[in-house]
Length: 430
Image (cartoon, rainbow, N blue to C red):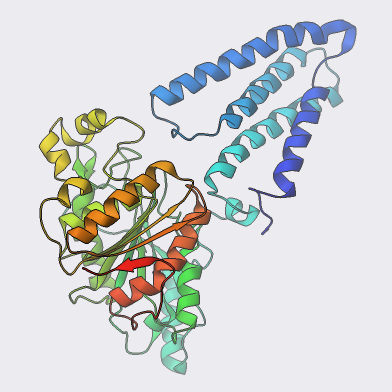
């Protein structure tokens, strides 16, 4: 179940079998294959091209959508064509092969997209969407009771799913995931600080605990520090109305208010999280990284510490232009956009006492340029910063490693552990 499906033999075998079954699906009787392919290939290309145009103009796929996926899309449509046109006259074995060709071509298409995004790195992550150490509320209570009775903390933390009431924001959103470290189960519950982790776009609240490996990263940290780690909240910032709110209050709902007011209040009231100054930090990947910087700059008293992993320089609704983003999210108001643009906010005043971590892959062009603009701008504005450029791209290999890299620094900034003796990043103080 831990076999990789983004590299190694599995993707290669799937694609090879898809091609073989596609060839075998062609009806070779009495020259029918010529007619099948003469019509089927142009139809497959035309259908795939039309779908690609619609998806691009409707911003249904990212700008870095792999071109090879379109090639496999052609193979999938062609397999469907061969199955339909050869079904009535085909034998049972040929029909089976045709259906197999359709299935394998679809798997190869989706697998190519997954290889680019690294969302599901293994078979286990593909079939198990929920976090690895997921428990229900009854089991959580049992663990609390057992720890209280024995005085022994569990060997690892757990992840639960919670519905955070949108008391202030009235934001209609999906359930969140929440990681509780072993120390939380102590008989006298400590007031642990909170780290909020935001997914990208498109993305889900489960991404950080899944492909991002956040709970295992926290467990490894806690294992070296007597079970102590931050509480981690992984909310859904996008809700039901769109796949991308950019974490602002807009016609899609009050996402910003939800993340700034409702999420911290819920964790503090329900899980005894720390309430003191500096007890909250926010981090995110891709669009979630952009959100983290923006929310911290707009609400420094709430989130004085932030981390951006492959974030962008300013809000961008899906893959649209700046003008389209302003129209969609800010009702056409450039002033409202500027009030949420980190590049503008950093030039408008000082942010003394804040700290930010920027990490990005050296092959990730746009986020790399953004980090090289935002980090020095943040330093000039009085923010203590760390910048780390690693080999890599815009994927979970980079993001999961970025969390590992920054976790000791985040724990220190949250007042949980002493300052790390050294960091993999280049860090500066104002």
